[in-house]
Amino acid sequence: MKMVNDFSIALQKKFGRQRLRKLILGSIPFVVIIFVWELNTHYVWLDPFEIPSIAAMWEAIFWLQSDCPDFMAAMQGHNDCNLSNNIMSSVGRVILAAFVGIPLGIAFGILAGVNRTLSGYLEPVGIFMNSVSGIAWIPLAIVWFGVGWETTLFIMLNTIFWLIFFNTMMGVRAVPKVLVQGVQTLGGSRLDTVKSVFLPGAMPSIITGMRMSLGFGWRALIAAEMIGGDSGLGFMIFVSASEFKSEEVFLGVILISIIYLISDRWLLVPLEKWTIERWGLVWKPT
Amino acid sequence: MMNDRSSVSRTHKLKKFVTDGAGRLIIFMTCAVLLWAFFSVFIIERPDRYLPSPLAVILSSADMIYKGSLLSYYSDTLTRLIFGGVVGILIGIPIGLMLGLNRTIADMFYPLMNFFQSVSGIAIFPVVVIWFGNSDTTVMIVILYTSFFPIAFNVLSGVRAVPVRYIQAARTLGASRLQIVRDVLLPGAMPSVAVGTRLSVGFAWRAVIAGEMLAGRPGLGNMIFSGQELDNTAMILLGMVMIGITWIILDHYLLRPLEADTIERWGLVQR
Image (cartoon, rainbow over the protein chains, first blue to last red):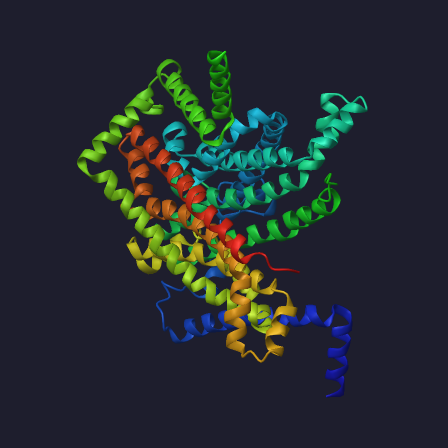
């Protein structure tokens, strides 16, 4: 008994009492759900078609990857590696859209935000484009580009670009005029004001927009893949649902949320925090 | 002299109109429609297939209004949004309140809710289809699911943000637990309830469109989707414009004023 006690004290000292408590308490519902889920597969209260067993889901991973020769082939996108191909095509599309859409959005946002009159006119454009959410563009995108990767990429780009554009514009507009005038008085060119005033001043807003846009974009991408795609996780779960392979659907849904959680918690939230700490406390003239 | 002054005031009025919010919107709308018409008539090769002119869209809307389908689609979508949003908010507020009141419960369920929030409503759609088929129930569940989380999380943080001093003051004066919830925590959390409501309705709106599209239930989402299947691009554009305008009206003229009023009325909590 004493050993257990010592062990728990040592654990608490190592990780901190509050964090340990949070971790344990937070894991209780997950454990209960998984336990009940397992019980269900033993006692079959609900049809295994409605709730597939965890083992079946685990097997589905290998089943989907069964024809895949080895790891390198999976990385190169071998035709038979179903699951890894779908994951990579979804994530790759997000990365591609982010690399194209974010710089474009920031550039146009700054251009629009620098000029107050222009930004006044472009504000309704941004609001309208953000209101016609990514999902509503899907049918039109299918008409324009046909079913395939162009459609999904277009939806993703559309969602990312307008959110970033709008946020950047708003951030640039919120930069106090005195700071710009200060730089200009000291002989700074237009480029200097953009580089050392507008960009850093709008940075917190841009990063917030980035986080929002990736959240919305990921959702829109899944929907776009379901309706107008030919690869990706959304496509996979939609096809599996129409083929009544519920274990693949569950696997896909869990993968989607895990990928989003990881990218959000470990990449975007720290980035946002760091940016706000670094650039957020812009001095406001009183 | 008189004439001069009136002309000055007229130009002033014009200037004010041009830089005014509503004036800007009208000018922008006119420009956008003109640009759209220009592209459609002079640049695109097959406008009826790829980008019908605004006139074609208006004509198709007149046709659909005449047949009565546009109004019925529109009311279907709005009913779904209102019903799903209201139920989602009514479930979300008590749960958020419960999590805000008790730290142990909050620590227990917060990670779970976080996980399920990141499974977006659209991704959960195939699972719900397996359970309920392509029915209205499916769309409803997806809407409920998406509108529940923003409000619950906002109420949670709103309750947490009420200063402890107020609770202690009420307790010192002999208030019961129920009274504290009713008189201190709920009014204190009111601004976050308003913010959460706006977010929830926004998410629900997206979910309605996507759900109707995927489940094939009659509504605006299904209208634009069937427009693509029937090769009727004018119908798609009409649906998109209606979706955008409805959301702008809902957001800017209903939810934002509501939020601002709530914050003005309840939000002046002194720190």
